[in-house]
Length: 270
Length: 83
Image (cartoon, rainbow over all chains, first blue to last red; front, side, top):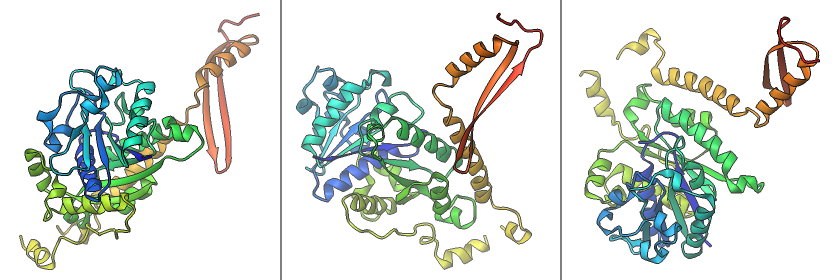
């Protein structure tokens, strides 16, 4: 029996799909059997980030409607044999998601994989509540920026009211990823510190990911950034995937590390 | 870059303060109870038996451990009243 984790955010564009792809691959690299599922119906993107867009034949809506078998729709990753992928439908919209069908699909996936990662639509969209309904845990992705954080709080509120686990009197685990941190801006007081974001949202931190140009370059090529050992964002995702696999990985303080003293001094005279 | 010398508040702390307040008020409005509108309609019915009503407002208030409903009924002396 595997664990089901929904990757969520309040607003779109914070890096949810990138996080899903990298964490899925990172978990697979830890020798766990993992499937990433794109629940963002109508805005299919996870296939692009994984470089699997040409392999998609059947999507999850067809599987849920019984028009395709689950086995036919699941795509194997090119870079890691432990990683599997189920695509969103591009032609339908998010309203096609039905609670009962989602429950059945999630239960089936849970049987066959150690980790089931669901890439959710943004929290303010329809379809969000069905994605999170049957998840054991949620990873909330935010950027250190006011609108992203405010919307994330609303998404967490919806999670707490719609989650099946909460309805059963249990707790749904929630973890925060702060994405696109600029150390220089935090240092100069132009960007919120992680500590402040955690205090405001009141949830546990699972990792911080720095702003990294390599992320765009990686998605251009359809190769998740975690494969680039030199990339700082890639290293951050490796650490987070390790934590999700139960390893004790120290939290690296990316908010101070990458501005060297020399750079600081030269910066003063610019 | 010498802003800090003159005690100008940095934008991150402004963001923190604004967010704290905005999220607190968002959370309050999420606390709207699901039966609120039904209850409002029933209160109007009851009060209308005796006196005209213009509006009813119900708020959930939380003071530490104490939760209370505050119900404001605005009367309408010329309003219609049922017998």
